[in-house]
Length: 435
Length: 81
Ligand SMILES: Cc1cc2nc3c(=O)[nH]c(=O)nc-3n(C[C@H](O)[C@H](O)[C@H](O)COP(=O)(O)OP(=O)(O)OC[C@H]3O[C@@H](n4cnc5c(N)ncnc54)[C@H](O)[C@@H]3O)c2cc1C
Ligand code: FES
Image (cartoon, rainbow over all chains, first blue to last red; front, side):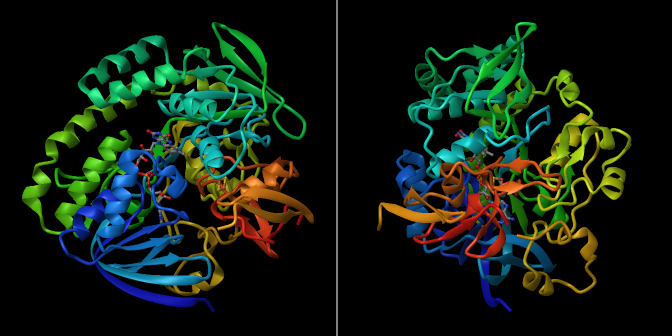
């Protein structure tokens, strides 16, 4: 039986990315008892990931050292998976179980990449865009490797710049969005001086890399791993030899925990009021789950949530302006990088859609809903619990996601024992192989 | 702090920089992480703990997410179990 640790906080923050760190800082600096939980080994979330040597980015270093000085309890390597009763969350560590109680809860669970299936996408060395960046940040040597970057979203450019700086050769960036929607995105950025500077800096870092709009991957070839990718570009197909294909189709919010806790979801995002309060009393939400908008928005929302959770309403109000400007950027992102319908036709009948259970496109296309596909094929019942295939089938077949059941991530048997006994184990993800 | 760590992947020693994840060690060894239910080799996809494609056995414990685990001196990693 694993060790059990109990802790109580005035404000508990889930997520140690920019939103969660900002929330924890503002609450802890007011003198209340704050805990911040993240499942990674280091704080920082997606953008600041990678530990102290990667904290050279000024805003990251500033916020993280402010958090360390604030007196907040930092709980890294813990994954929240269940709420046994109101005001209590269960988290699993490497070999222990944490029972965390709170008065106010701030959800800052961030986002993940959207993946879409196409022939060959399950070959090793086909990775996410942010995914490959994360691997390089955690030690994967990329110098001299040829990396094709494809998909959609601003992450493509940021990661191309990062990989090139680390010695990768980038033969091409394929962006599925059209030039006209990219131009609109460019226009929307004029309200954002910070973003323009970032954009210009990227432009210099990206000089000489081939960038194609209206372009997407069709298939990957290779035996044991990627050898070449076939792309669609300028109305034609083209094969490009490479060592990696980094491919991701923008971001989707991590709303499983907010859903589990009963927060209302509106158009795919957690619904919040001006003070970042969700529809569930005592629960606030900040950052990507309320709308994909980048680091400035996450910082503004996080601060507001932390201030409100610690009763500093007037201070919170002062940040509404900054938050609303950043939100404008978020909305322009959604429009500019909307997925084109041609991408629905990328999979062939035998393309695997659910990678955990190896369920192919032809078996899924017979179903009319996610629920029916799940029940009849086990799609989405493996350890990722539909985090990959659920977001792709939502786009491919326009299926609506199901309700969420605990545990929201696969956990050890001992952790399950700590959950309520009425639980329906069949649907809990345990049968799909726990970690 | 050590600047380099040696782990074994399927019994073969691999040297990684300190702070490297087990995924890095597996990729440096030129291995796929796992074999899928229909027998395909699979490597890491998301790099952030979402997809579970990077599962390996670490020190005898099966199904560990290698992208969420840092290498430690002498760790025994297996992708063939
Ligand atoms: C893979 C990836 C790479 C990215 N790279 C860049 C980049 O290079 N440049 C850029 O400008 N933007 C990047 N982004 C966009 C980035 O997400 C935002 O700019 C910013 O990091 C959002 O901050 P956040 O705090 O809202 O969320 P995040 O940074 O995503 O932080 C959320 C944190 O919560 C944790 N978490 C979630 N659920 C649980 C749970 N149940 N239990 C415990 N912890 C949990 C997550 O692991 C994560 O650490 C990237 C996004 C992704 C998905
Ligand atoms: S690579 Fe996706 S969980 Fe490790």
